Length: 127
Image (cartoon, rainbow, N blue to C red; front, top):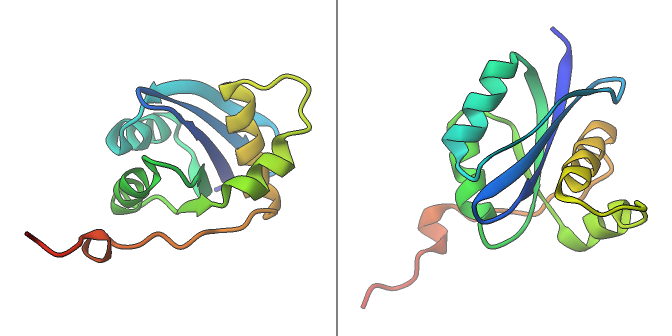
């Protein structure tokens, strides 16, 4: 089965999702609820074999990353400054374009992964 590469541009309510094939052709572009189950269901409906799924580090990324990994998706949280530099030269900046740019980064391997702490490691001392 062909490998596919997914980019997510995460917002509070909706996430832009782009799926590319190995040649860089767009297989699917859509918006889904910002929820790991909704994203996993969308990819399941698309019937794609995901090699890498990328999302930028941010306020929702730890929760989303954990849910995507728990769903069996090969999620990678990527460094925001590097991503901004890589896709910042695009003439028109949109959520859809950012998702496509992140998918291209996943396809080419030109990204910097960041470590995502486990939920247990994120927790502090209880009061």
